[in-house]
Image 1 (cartoon, helix red, strand yellow):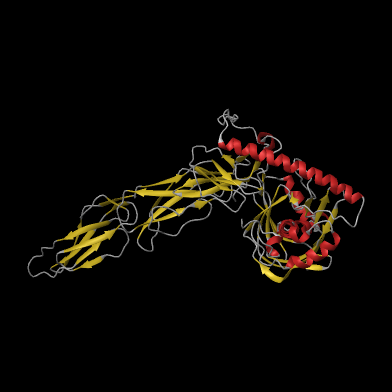
Image 2: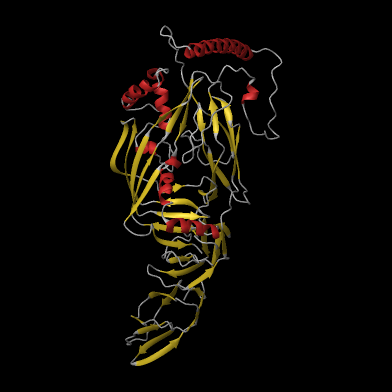
Length: 187
Length: 393
C-alpha cells in the first residue's frame, strides 16, 4: 500500500483489497440482520463478496475528512481563498491543536431486476485529535500535510449492529499526505 | 630554501648548515617576516619548515651572535602565491529542491589543505577534507553565487578562495509529466501499456511506475512498459527523476487514467468492441483477425457458443422469475443469483459508476461513500484554527 493513502480502511482494520478478512465473524450479525431485509438474496452465499465490497466503502482518505471539518473555520477558508490570488506562491499554515468529530452514512444500493432499489445504510462515527499539523496550500487547494500527531477512534454500525470499532489510539500519519494527484513540484 | 616561489600554506623548507668560527657560541634566530614569532635554533645541521598563510613577498632574516656581536643576515626573499583553486557547479540551472553539486580542484597536493563551501543562500559547509561539497538543494528560486574557501590545518582560517559561475534556480515545471494508459478497459490478464513522457532538456532522467495494485518498479531509463492486472479498478501513477552523481532525485509525479479490468467473459460482442482503448500510437499497428483457424480461435468459438447458451438460459429463468414475483406463490421460491459487483468509489462525492455494458443479471450492488452529506464538527480551544501563516516569497 502506498504510504500516502491512509484511509478509514486502515483505521478500522478492514482487510486490504484482495486479502482475506482476519475477522470474518464481524459479518455474521450483519448477515443475519440484512437477510431479514433482503429475503430474495442468498446472503450467506454472497457474503464473502459483499463484505469485500463493503470494505471498499471505507477507502476514504483521512485528509478528505479533515478537509470537510476545516472548511468550517472562517480563518482557514479565508487563507485558502487568498492563496488563489497568488497561485504560484505556496503558503504554510500551522494549525492549532484541535479535534474533528464526524458522522456520515455510506451505503450500498442493491438493485434487483424488476424491483425497486434498496439501500443498506451504515453509520460511521469517527473522531480525530490532531496536534502540530502544518499544511501547504497553493492556488486555493491543500497540497500537502506536513503532519504532526493524530489519535483516532470510531465505530461502524448497521441497524445498531457494530461491524467495526476502534478505541482511541494514536495512528501514524504519513509524513507527507498529498491531496492533489497532479504533477507535484518538489519543494 | 625550497620551494621559492611557494604557495600559500605550502611548507617552505630552510636548510641550516652553520659553520661557526672556532670558539663562537652561535645562536641563530630565524625571522620569517610574516609577523610570526622568530624561531631560535642551535647551530647544528637542521631543516626548518614554515608555512606562509598569505600571498606576498617575505623578507626572511637570520640573526646570529658571533663572538658577542649580533649579525643580521637577509636571505633571499620568499615569494608566496595564492593557491590556484577552481570551483565548478553542476548543473548551473536547476529546479527548486533538486541538488546542485560543487567540486573544487586545486593543483596543491598538500594534505593539510581544507575546503569550505558556501552556497550563496546563507548556508555553508564546515571545513572539510573532501574537495566535493555534499549535494545542496535550494529552496527558493533565484540566482546564487557559490564559493569555496581554502585553508590549511585542522582549525584553518581561509587563506584563499574563489567563486563558481552563478547558479540559477528555477521553479519546477508544472504538468510536464504525462502518463498515458492504453487501454483503460481491458480483460483480466491482458497487458496495459503505461507510457510516461518528460522533457529531458539534456539531463539524464529516469522513470518509476506505481501500478495501483501494490506493485511498483525501480527507477529505470524506459518510460514505457506493460503490466497485467487482476480483475478490479486501478489508478496507476508515474514519477520522473533526474540522475545526479549516481543518485536519482524526484522531479515530478502524476496519476494516470483509471484502469478497469473485467473478468474474461464469454463475449456476446466481439472483443474489439469491449475495449474502449485510447488511440494507438502510430508505431502500434491495429491487430488484424486471423485468417486461419488456430487452436486459440477454436477455444474462443467454443466459449462463445457456451456463453450464448448460458445467456439464453438466464433470460428464460429471469422471465420466469419475474412472472413468479408478480404473482407470489407459496410453492415457488425465487432462485437467488450470484451477485455481480460493479463498484467505483470516489470518496467525497456522490458519484456512482455502473458499467453500461454488463447485463442486469441477478442483482447488483452500488457503493457510495456519501461523504458530502455527513456531519462534521471542529472543536478547538482557540478562536482561530490557523495559529500562524507563512508565505514563500
